Image (cartoon, rainbow, N blue to C red; front, side, top):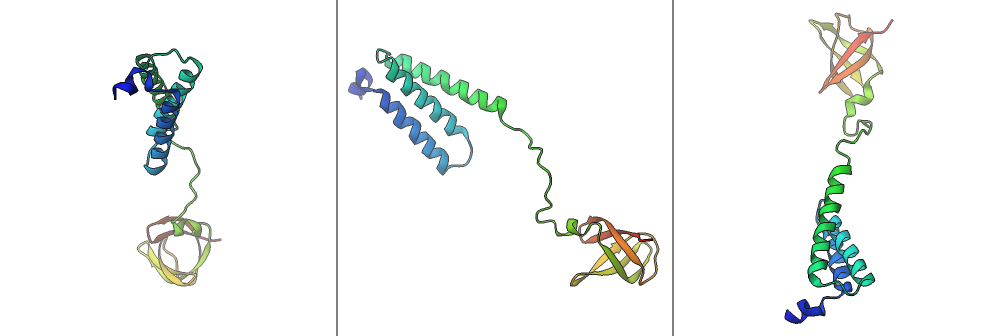
Length: 149
């Protein structure tokens, strides 16, 4: 250990440490080790460019680069992604806009309609059986409908 600390710690040791941290990042969830790995690789690059750096300076440089890289990641990471909702795994959302025929009249706001291979509970205004309705919303297994003119 003394030989390593007294000049035996070379630039490529930082690169090995950096690539080990990057490999650890691949094997574990999250993105924390990646930034510290980049700091280790950058420290190795600086130690290669300036071979007279002492180990203490390299360690301080590594610590500073680690703090800076992790701090920049926290500052610029996306907090909420404004991606459009795809409706994935929400089967009922694909039924909005479909026109159905009521199997049972809507009485007290509740009725039934056949959609594809199943019978769905529908809610809407009082309408007789056989009336055409359009799906305007989905709430769990209940389709909210309105009368089609």
